[in-house]
Image (cartoon, rainbow, N blue to C red; front, side, top):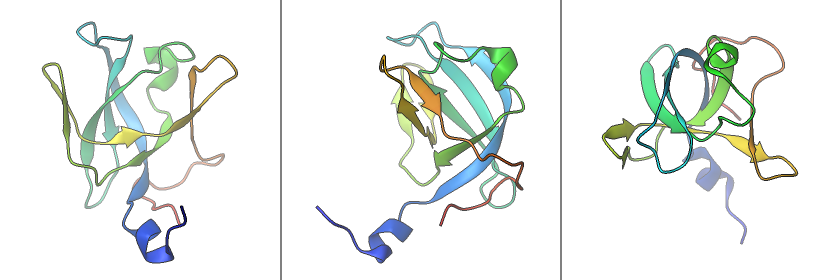
Length: 111
């Protein structure tokens, strides 16, 4: 299936900085609860991410990540996840986050 450029523009993908990380023991699979600052009009958003295999709270705090910020929020247990943090599976299916290779202003949009 192909999509048009206008379809692509409907997906709002932004960069933000993780400002807080908490364990999420209520999740079915090991996960963290993230608080991410996207700056500007998007502001601070919450996300649940199954990224415990490659990352610790200490390595995540202050890290820039890429996320879809215009999905409908999703209830995960008692937690409302507002954005989808993006990553790729490694050779074992464990998630490796997408991140810019240089520090850029929070809220920058992917294009």
